[in-house]
Image (cartoon, rainbow, N blue to C red; front, side, top):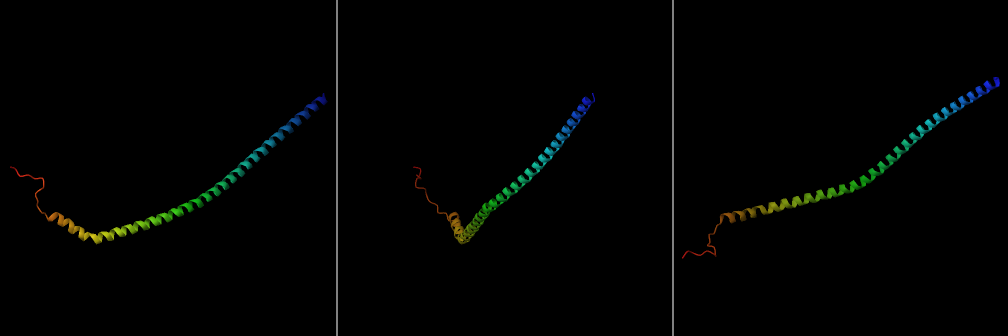
Length: 118
């Protein structure tokens, strides 16, 4: 019987060692998963920063050219306003004279279709 109890003890000890090894393996697995997750997060952050930098560069190139268009449009608008203002100042006097003469100088005439009553 002692050999049986000794065999049972050995089995219990072996079972306990196996259980300890399983727990140790689970802990290592958990640590490795956590480490892999941190590495993946770091890699994702690095990739995101790289893509954002590329995006900003492209955006700067595109917006820079739009800035040039904006400056050209502003310049053209200023030139057009300057031309219209100078044209106004040149022609305001003659237009006022024409308007006043059209309104004030009335020459009454009989309409060609008018027939006097018989």
